[in-house]
Structure formats: C-alpha cells, structure tokens
Length: 190
Ligand SMILES: [Zn+2]
Image 1: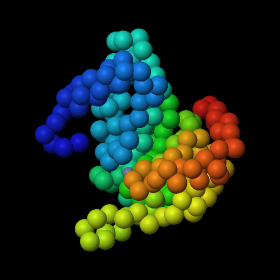
Image 2: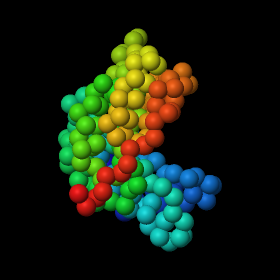
Image 3: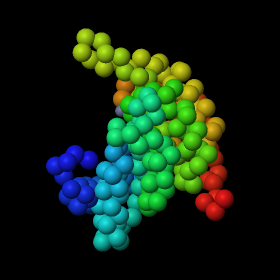
Image 4: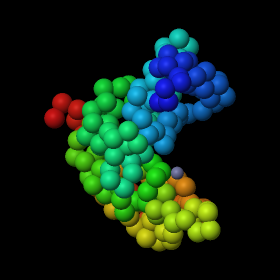
C-alpha cells in the first residue's frame, strides 16, 4: 500500500468495486496480484463490509504474488501471508502472476500442507524474458498444463493462467486437469 492512501480509503474503494460487481451479477470476487498483505486486508475489509450491508454474499478469492525468492514485494513470505489470509473471511486462497509455475512449487507445497481453505494457482506462462523492451513469456502450453496438473494432484482446487497464457495454454490445462475433481477440503480442526 503506497504511503499516499490510508487503509480506510482503500477499503472504501474496494467496497464500491464489490458493490458494482455483485450488482452486475458477478459470482466470485477475485482480489489478485496482491503484492502487499495490508492491501489484501483492506480489500477484504471493504468487500466484506459490502457483503454485510447488502446481504449479498458471493465467493471471495484472494491471491498474492510472490517473486522468484518466494516473497511478496514488501518481504512477506508464504507462511506470513497464509497466517494473515487464514484469519480473513476468504473462501479461496492462492497465488498468481509474477513467475511461471516452476517458481511456485515450494509456496504451493506449503499451502497444500497448511491451508485449511481451497487453493488456487494462476501462474504466468513462465518467467518473463525482456526482448527489445517487451516482456515475452516463454513457457509453452504443454509443460505449463503438466505442471498445473501436478499441483492439482497435490491438492490445488482452482487452476488457470495469468500473464502470457493464451487460449492454447488453457485448452491444455482443461485437457490435463479437466478430469480431476478437487481434493477433499482439509478439516480446519486438524
Ligand atoms: Zn500476471
């Protein structure tokens, strides 16, 4: 969260967004590419205040973004991020963007072992390479989808793609993962 905006201001912005999206017919609200755990808290605060005020509640999915070292922009690691996310009224917890799936293995392993909520993973099509000032995403649909199907076997319930993924990537994901059913959700008491 930049120093120019307060928690309350940010929460109010997300309240308004939630209202527009839910009144417009959205079934799921996705807070994604979050690089600051405080920003997620503000988003969830605004969204859940809207849910409460309106009596309309839809599924809420929140995804953070980790760099290749497994940390958020301000240094939060997956254990710290999960502790915060678990304390919030979120339905699905996950990761998206920044890197390809190959760099998400360890944090996903951590989530599958520790999260009491369903897990989502929407990676980029590989770690971007800078070609003449433009980001190029090098991972082909087949290896991308294979890795996501491995994550599904570990217990990830929601998979998809972020930057650089194409309809061909997602078609492969459906081909590899489409037959699998989500894993049974872990009992929060255990
Ligand atoms: Zn992305």
